[in-house]
Every structure is written in C-alpha cells, then in structure tokens.
Length: 374
Ligand SMILES: Cc1cc2nc3c(=O)[nH]c(=O)nc-3n(C[C@H](O)[C@H](O)[C@H](O)COP(=O)(O)OP(=O)(O)OC[C@H]3O[C@@H](n4cnc5c(N)ncnc54)[C@H](O)[C@@H]3O)c2cc1C
View 1 (cartoon, helix red, strand yellow):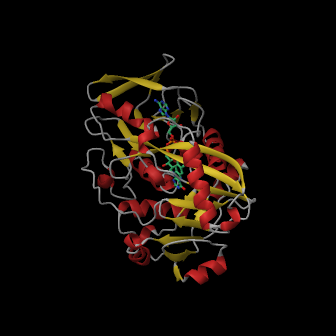
View 2 (cartoon, protein in one colour):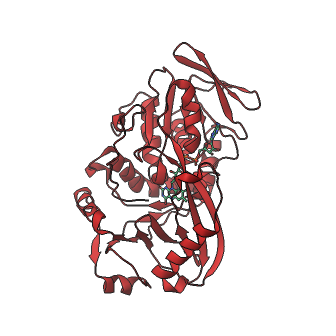
View 3 (spheres, helix red, strand yellow):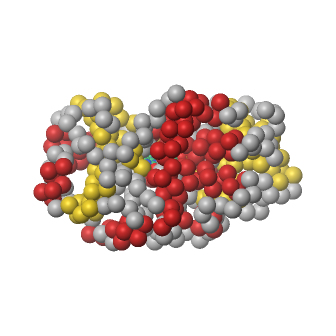
C-alpha cells in the first residue's frame, strides 16, 4: 500500500473505522490516524442499542441511515466474524419503549416505516419484564437489537488490517498545510506529515478543532454520558425510558444509561451523583436491580451537534476535505449508513441518502425529533 494513500481518515472510532473498511473494500487505499488507541472513545463507551428501521420507507435521511444500520448490522456482523473470527455480540434481543405523552406521535413514524411494534398495557409489560414503577405508554419492539461496542470495534479494526488499511495510533492530527483550496497535509503532534489525496475528518467530539482552520465552526461539542453496569436480576429486553435505558448483556450483567451532560465539556469521568442517579433509576424501574452489585462504570463523550444530526459530506470551500462527525446519541446505529454514504461520495457513486440534510453549513433545525432517542 502506498505511503501516500488516496484517503487519510482522521479519527478511528466507529465512524472512521467503518468508513475505512467500506472504502478499502472498493479498492480505495486508506490510512486511519487516531490520537490515542483506536476505538477507545465514544464508540467504546456507547450502549450499543440498535433500534429497528426500514430504509425503503424512511421519512427522513436520518431515519434512512438508522434503517440501513438496522437492516445491515446482521450481515456486517457475520461478514466481520467470517473475516476476523471475532464475534461482535450482535443480538436481536427486542425492546420495550415507554413513550412519554409528548413522544407518543413517534408511533406514526414507526408505522409509516413498517417497524413492528405492539402497544402493551402495564400489566402485559409486567408479564414480560420484572418491572417496578414505570411511566409512559409501553410499546414492544421485537426487532430492537444490540451490539457489544468494544467487540465490534475489535472486529472492525481487524477487518481493516486484513483489508490493507494502514492504521496509525498515537498520531494526533494538529495542523493543516494548504495549497489554495486543497489541503496538502496534516501535521501530527509528533511532527509527522500526513499526506493524502483526500482527507476525511471523523474525530467525533474533537472534530471542531480540525474544522476551525478550514473556516467552519459548526458547533460540534462533547456531551458526556455516564454508564453503570450491574450484576443482578435485570430485564431480558432493552428498556427505553426517555433518555434513560437498561440493556441486558445476556451474561448476568445489565448496562444502565445514561446521563446527558454538555456542561462537563471534555472532562471524561464518572461522578458519584451521576452513578447514584443511574442506580436509583435502575432500582425503580426493575426492583430486582435495587441493591445489585455495581460491577463497573464509565463515561464517554458523545459528539454533539446543534440539532443532534451529524455532519456528513464535503467541507464547503475545500476541494479534498470531507467530514463525518456529530452523531450524538446515535453513532453506532448510524455507522453503517454513514460509512456507506461516505464511500459512495468518495467513489463518485450516487449516495444512499441526500447529503444536504447533513451539510456542514446547514442552518440547524432545532425541531428535529428522533423516532428513537438512542
Ligand atoms: C454513554 C454513551 C452511550 C451511547 N449509546 C449509544 C447507543 O446505544 N446507540 C448508538 O447508536 N449510539 C450511542 N452512543 C453514541 C455513539 O457512541 C457515538 O455517536 C459514536 O460512537 C461516535 O463515533 P465517532 O467515531 O464519531 O467518535 P469517537 O468514537 O469519539 O471517535 C473519534 C476518534 O477520533 C480520535 N481523535 C480525536 N481528535 C483527533 C485528532 N486530532 N487526530 C487524530 N484522532 C483524533 C479520538 O481519539 C477518537 O478515537 C452513545 C454514546 C455514549 C457516550
């Protein structure tokens, strides 16, 4: 593989690695640079919830990206397992979404997409899961799935390696070199000069710093999320309650998420209050988890954007710089659709979704309502 690749990807989380793998499969030469170890930031920290979807009947481009993820995750998981021997833990475990009155209209989005769901009375929901005090209208989602993020990232990394992607960890891209409207190189903190025909920025919550010298301030920012993992009698399905959820891991562990703390900035740590709040939520929702052993906890920094939608596409004003960042609470479910769109864009194929919705210079639409919060 050439030292000077066609595409240099800056940021090796789920968005960068999935894009690298898809591009490499089309024969494009790719190198990925990460300032730390690959796949150890938001993508590692996420809960791995994969809501159902149907790209053929999606109402919006974002819904279509979610649908592509829902549809293609089983096949990609199998492909990665065949190629690398690594099981990413993909599982269609089903879920129950407890909708608050103000969210009740999302069922019309689900119905229009053809997503399978079934309204449940509280007693029906309690027959399925060991529930305590829950609010909202319960809806069974048999096609809700999950993936084990750290396993998936390991599989993606191994697949990239086997596909000839050059992987550079501990390589923090810091300073651009320009040649008119073209980016010529990025210099790393260690002084290495990264050159490529084209650059794709996938640095998650840290992308804003790389976009600023290009004249763009789209408002990408970190939104801390804390997670607690309990050992005890948890649910069998994913339970979604607004911004909170419980995810059964199938090995006696239940993951409880998550806080949403933009005020924490880049401070990636758990707090006693944050974890106590999650434990109290878990114990109220599933009494079998009250007093359960806290196995572990962690925090991650979601890449937030002003309207919660990612930025995907060419960076305006530059001939050879592209971005895919800002996936906020949905980067795992949107990863396959994003990587597909990026690959199509960079290989000159028609994109699976119109990218105007995700343009870097769009006017943020603060009324965007997601069919799923995670
Ligand atoms: C607690 C929590 C729960 C979540 N749950 C879900 C969920 O259930 N379902 C879902 O779909 N999504 C979920 N998410 C959201 C999802 O995890 C993110 O949207 C997604 O991981 C973003 O991926 P990314 O590759 O853009 O960012 P990241 O994974 O953060 O990757 C960015 C990478 O860029 C690197 N980088 C940064 N700056 C530089 C630089 N200058 N040079 C080189 N490299 C650089 C970083 O080291 C990092 O590896 C959750 C997130 C959190 C935190």
